[in-house]
Length: 470
Ligand SMILES: C[S@@+](CC[C@H](N)C(=O)[O-])C[C@H]1O[C@@H](n2cnc3c(N)ncnc32)[C@H](O)[C@@H]1O
Image (cartoon, rainbow, N blue to C red):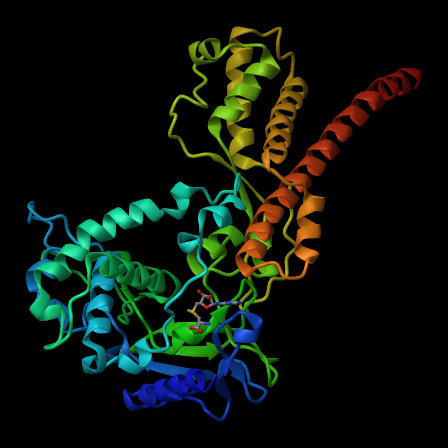
């Protein structure tokens, strides 16, 4: 506890020393570990709207421009920008920053960011670090092993980061410091990669306008965005409903977005509109508010098979009719999601998240049925029949998906009520429960649609008779 507070104090003093502004009268860094949120920034007083709470000079950021490493290993870093050098695959911004963070960490007291590095995490709750049995709880969810990417990340770090450190010991290790084993180095690279994933910012240029380069081409601003670690801005926790914003100007400024931030309220940043599964994958936590953005993936093959069953057509017959739903086996799956709206300018979520359509899936199924009608007009007499078939196919794939999860909604809710459940287990259950709740909402909506069509069918003859009688 004392150590934790001391590290916070050292970090805060260092931050001010390097030119950062921290409005001590309005905010403080608090220990939020009891809520599972590490450090966070909390209002000490009521805060007005549009009030600057923190200012971070760009020189305090860790990135390719401020670290000494790129100057010491220009060849390694220049390749990142020299696309004509065909021998070396350029380091991407991610790899560059991992290498820089490994370097700064290995410098120990000699790094000018030491007090900042001391408050960065050493362990993570992102699924990248989960055991096999913990991962099993995520079965059937969008968080597949491929998506979590432990293997791909191991391969990348082993081939792209570890060799650079091994070949340049004089640069990476201060005099008298023992070199790390290959496994320790890989673990350190993973740790830095995960820190960057959860903490780094995409830095926008501070120039207002795009600038033409010497050939007169306008430089793409997006390409100029650089990844960087921004001390103190990254002590802010975040939620889908947030109350502060980071402005990228000559320096970076954190400002309040609302007029009603009361003393004791946590200052929250915005990491983006993401499903809870993605928040877990990148940041290792979950809040209720992210569930509105939850998503479920339906493989194209499942849709093609359901269409085959609904129409009695074989995969080859469908292909002959030019229907290629599953032609690209690696094709992106269909996404089931709500219409969630965006947070307003105060960071509030005011719109209700509604499940009311499946835009891509419906459109492609309608096109497929149009193609089928061309070849077999008797199968799809009119648009009502076509819409009925679309509804039936979507209902089938959604219900099938729901049946694949090893536990039911009820069982998951019961698990969440148990005491003693680990944080990782709880998060896995929340992710899979969020997906199932979404699928249930989709089924309810599809049933309501079918019922509306059936009602119309029933009313039609009556209406006709009524108009005849008149
Ligand atoms: C940019 S850091 C924020 C500072 C962090 N709490 C710390 O102590 O260093 C992002 C990490 O903070 C945690 N975090 C952010 N927002 C959170 C929230 N609303 N609830 C719980 N943890 C949160 C997660 O561990 C996430 O990976």
